[in-house]
Picture 1 (tube, rainbow, N blue to C red):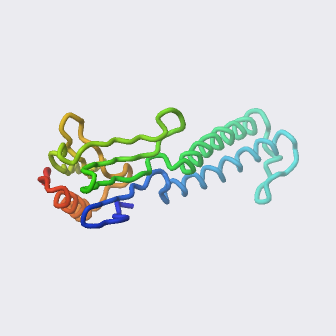
Picture 2 (cartoon, rainbow, N blue to C red):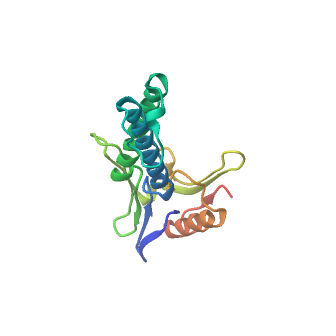
Picture 3 (tube, rainbow, N blue to C red):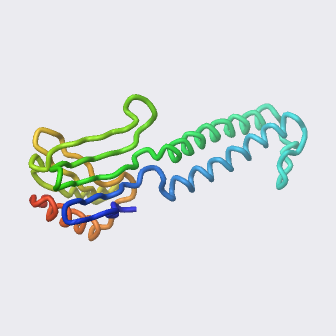
Length: 188
């Protein structure tokens, strides 16, 4: 998803940023979970000589090396799936961008991994915002991103990581934000 506007008023603009709770992450976590359980059950069936799978007969596999390797692949897949489900549950990368003209502040908030930096938050004054920058890179690995150029800081990314945003959506978001903050739009 792009950065939809959650709430807007004449003095407040708040955009949500989708983190790891994207359809593609749910898809891959489900596929890897099912595959991992299948491989692990195949390895266990080969070892125990008891059919644990309703759709195949892995008891005919020789435990060393086929059953053992399938069991190890299953364990590796379950560990990877656990990581994916944890990232989805914690909504890594999700958050919001808030631009408040009443308090003269910009607040960029993202969720991170557990620890002392679980909440990643950057605050600055609107008067320090120099411009809104659009970065376009086409080719094999295209990149379309929106950045906030702030005095004394590196450029702050405003869009999510993942699938590139449609060019028209990116232009509209950049123009809307630049108009709201009364700063120039760069990169087009």
